[in-house]
Image 1 (cartoon, one colour):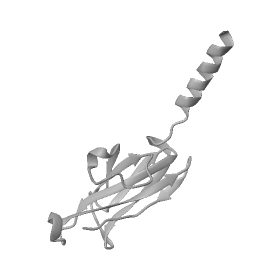
Image 2 (image 1 turned 180 degrees about the horizontal axis):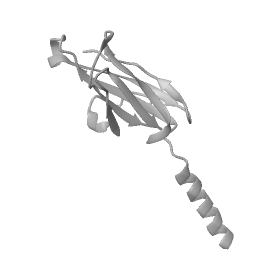
Image 3 (image 1 turned 90 degrees about the vertical axis):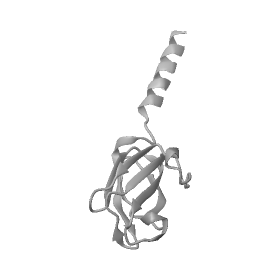
Length: 123
């Protein structure tokens, strides 16, 4: 009976110690957000964990988000896993959709890996 408790405890520690599809890990996804090569400053990048396909345009379906800087650069510190990134911003030279531009990309990342993904967004 005592061995069963130890085995269960080891299994629980292994399960909790293996983080996947979460933020603040040692892996890094970064890039910039562009609309037809124009940098989109202060765009938002929504992050869906454990996803390889667009989960939809409803941003409440996403697990987290980061804000790009004035140069359209974003960085996400994460753990290994599959993520879908959905960029959302505004281009004042676009007359449709009140200038709103969106788009996304799937990314898969391993432990301690750095991946650069420039998000191409469109109207």
